Image 1 (spheres, rainbow, N blue to C red):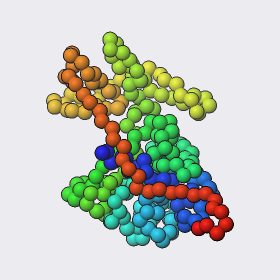
Image 2: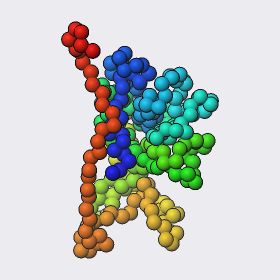
Image 3: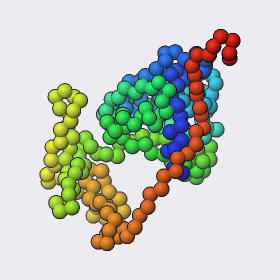
Image 4: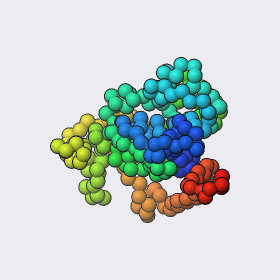
Length: 245
């Protein structure tokens, strides 16, 4: 079972800062650079799960702003911090995330697609490099990160066919700053890593390979198995008749 399944069962509370009996406003809403907004919305749910005392800093995902008050050494799931200014300077597409008791996975699906982002989940094991400077995590903690692997706005493959190969293009915003257009890239520099013997990766700026299953390829057969996990949290609500708790 992939560790991403955890994110399909984190419900986004209307107000993670208030008790279950007092949820106001009724809709969770947050605007900002997509990585920061999605990470913060998940961080608030995880923090609610691990801490009962609430004293949010001005920028919750800027770990330095917490001083010594945020101890995540016993948390099973943590979010790799990305401050608002870091995401703003990175030029990440903005998003408005909203939820009326949706799961984080359902809420994040559209913003992730629009901003061409990828959720990366890793288990931290003692002896591994720290996920971020000064991190103090338990052995086996699940570290959630959101990164841009697409190269969509810097130049990458956008289509092509078996005969002409991959078509490279860069996306640019149209005049309305909502839609985008694709401009073909010609005579681009080849990444220096591609000339290194034994290099086993590909750059998003110039992908060069597609793996196809068939007699002519190195993949003779492949299978994909999906098994849904079970819920770890269930929330229910509504109006009861007088006298019923």
